[in-house]
Image (cartoon, rainbow, N blue to C red; front, side):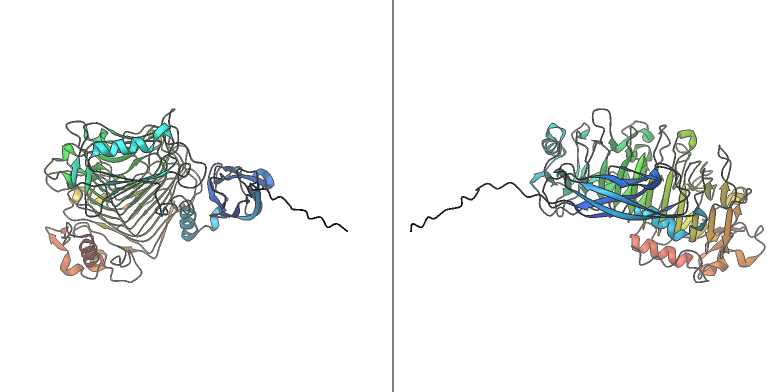
Length: 585
C-alpha cells in the first residue's frame, strides 16, 4: 500500500480581522420636560480597536421620534412628557461592523428640578468635550523654534493641504515677546467626526521648560481642531487702534474652512498689563474672541489675564474657564458676549469655576461698561445659555466713586442679559463690587429654573448715596415676548442687600440681609456688614456714614488675595453665604 502525504498550503497574507465598536456610552440620560428641540441630552462615545476607524451613530429605536443624533450629540427632537423612554443607539465603524446599546432616558418634570439636577445637566455637556487634552503620550513630530517666525513656519508645515494627520508638538524656546510683524495663522484643519483630534492629528504648542515666550502679533486660528497652547504669552497691543476692536487671538471659520473650532489654552498669560506694563490702558486690547458665527469649544485653564480690555468673548458652544486669575481687566465678559458682536449665537454651556477676579480697571474717559459676566442680549441676537458659575472670588476695584469716575453704566454682574432659553446656576461664590447695579437676572423665555445658593454679594467701599438704591439683586421681566409666569429664580442661603422683583419671579429662603448703605439709611445695625461678617467691626470703616475697607494683598499672590478676602467676608453664621474658599486654589 502506498502512503500519500498532503501538505496544506497556508495563505501567507490572510485577510485582516476587524472588530466592531465596544463600550457605547452616553454621558447623560436625564432631561427635563422644558427641553426644546435642539437641546443636547448627552454626548455619545465608543471604543474601536481598529486603528483609523471612524465610528458613526444612529438611532435604531426611537419611540415617538423624540430624539435625534448629530455627530456625537444626542439631541431633543420633539416635546417631552415626564417618564422613561428607552432608545437604542447603533455604533457603526468604517467596516460596517455595528454594536447596539439601549439607554433609558429619564424625562423629569421641570417643576421637580433642583439646583443639583440643573448643575448636573450643565456639567454633562462637558464630560467628553475636552477629555482628550493631555492624553497624547507620543508625538509623531517634535520641532523646536526660537522665534515667532519659526513658529509660523512649523505651524504651516503641520497643516499642509489643510489636513492635520500627525500629532505635532512645537516647543517655543525663547523668552519675552517675539514678533513677525504680521498675523500668525493656523488654518485649514479639517473637520473631525469623533474624538478630539483631526484624523489622528493634533497641534501642541508649548513653552520650553524654564522659558516664558510671548507673541506680539495677533494669532488667527481658522477652523481649529484639537490645538493646545500651553505656557505661551499673548502680548499684542492696540498700537493706536481702537482697543475694543483689536484682539490678541481670534478663533474663526469661513466658507473655505468651516470646521467647528476646538482649542485649549493652558497656563497662558494674556495682556499688555503683564508683558508691557508701561503701556497705557488705551493700548490694551481684547484677549480672545470667537468670530464669524463659529460656535467654538474653548477651555481656559490656569491662565492669567492682566491688562486686557475684554476677557473671552464670542459665539462659544462649550466654554470652560477654570482656575484663572483675572487682573487689571476692564470688562471680564467671561461668557458668550461681545459688545460689538451682532450675529446669532447658539445654545451654549458655560462652566466657570475657581477663578479670581481682582484689581480691575475702569477708565471713565474711554469705557462705559464694566460687566463681569453678561450672556448676551436679544438686541444682539444672543440666544440660549446655560451657565454654571461656582467657587469664584471677585473684587471689583478702581470702579465707582474712585479716581473721579462716576461708575459703570451697566453694572457689575449682568447675568443672562435679555437672553432666551437661559439657565443660570450660581453657587459658592464671593462677589464684591463697586458699580451702579448689583446682580441682575433677566427673564428666560421658557420654564427653565435658575438658582443662586451659598453666595455672598457685598457692596464695596466708597459708595455715594446716589448709588445706594441700586445695591440689590434685580429680577427683570421686561423681555419680549413676555417671560413665563411664576418663580424661575430660587435664592437660598445667600447674603445680599435686597431683591427687586416686581413680577414675583424670585423665591428667597435662608438668606441674610447685608446692607452696606450709609448708616443714616440702614437703621437696623444688625443688617450692616460690620455685624454680618466675623471681623466686620475691625475691618470696616465708616467716614461720614459711608462704608470703606481695604483688601490686603489684593495685588499679591492668589493665595494671599483669597485669604485676605475670607478674612474680610467670613460670615458670622455658618452655612450662610460663601463657604471657606482658601482650599479652592
